[in-house]
Amino acid sequence: MKRILFALAIALIATASVEAKPKQLPDWQEGYLDIHHISTGRGSASLFIMPDGTRMVVDVGDLGDPSRWKHKEIMPAVPSTEKRPAEWVARYVEHFSKPLGKPLYVDYCLVTHFHCDHLGYDDHLAIEVEGKPYKYTGVTHFANLVSIRTLIDRAYPGYDYPSAEIMQRRGKDCFPFYKALVDEREAKGEKNEQFKVGSDMQLVLRNNPSLYPTFRIVNLCGNGLIWTGEGNGVRNLIPDDAPAGSTLGENNESCGFRLEYGDFSYYTGGDIGGKYSKKANNYWKDVQSAVAKVVGKVDVALADHHGQHDSMNANLLRALDAQVIVLPVWDLYHPQPATMKRIWEVSPECEVYAAGMAPENRYERLGEYGKRIKQDGHIVVRVYKGGKKFQIFVLNDYSLNYEILYKSKVFKAERREERGVRKL
Image (cartoon, rainbow, N blue to C red):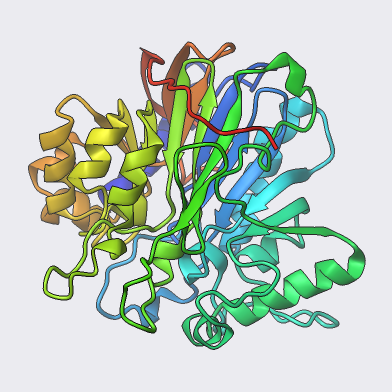
């Protein structure tokens, strides 16, 4: 309720006086790297506008009808329930792509893993379309609003890790629609790919890469594999001596990467976790600690698994040493107080931002931690030309004008580390 009143107050101020109108984010310029963490209240979505104008969307979640989540309080859908989440994401992409002066498309759409809050959900809110072999929800909806040059996920083309049967069982409420979209794209000759762990030549600049030689994205983990930290080497996260039939779980099979530009670096790991059962000694389920050994320091990190209890363990926090952490959150348990305590114990000066937030969590469950988290909304990381400086902007997620609610100081980017990925 407090966030709604705050948003209404901003709207009233804006209409009262032209001079009082909140400022909007200055347009992207050639050489800028903009990373938008989009708040819909219904799942994860990010937009990357790279220094040469290459565009990438990571995940388009849609939880469906929140009333089925009876044990959770879900924040209001933003900016409203007038459209589905994918429609709001598409509108957002279109709005912030205007400075590029190009048709509406994204070069890449990466699906980190097959859960509804990253992919879409089959319920009565999913849209049936005549002639389509799937309903519109999340990624399948977005793909019919914004052209996707290359669609990437962890398991293409076989979709059989850890097995086809397990994948079908895990993703019964979301995966069949997505697979039908992939098949439709195949029939049309459109490009689909598997996320290539260990590569820095998959998510590349598509327009003028020679102008930005310090830009690269290193694929760290996904589909049960992790980069070794040398060349393009990878290894299985599950060791050979693990009990037969052992699996990581869908969250731990998420795609994760490290992005570098100039002196700036950024990390995202989907929903990988950082805990395991000491009794079962399944230490390999602590994927965050495995990532910590190869990721290197970063300036900005997207919190794994929405700040849940298994999010951002101490090993990963120490390895990242991030100046800023962004929380992709929308329900009462995003983030957990213990997670916030851990973040600030390891990194006392780290600034934390929330792309969305359930008001009851901020003002009741989190206590003093909730007060310390910065203003929530769409969280934009703007890296200035050359990658030596960056700044955080919080945009109003209740408004279609995307007014600036908060802006940070200008940070010095200082977390670049040379890693050993060989060019393919």
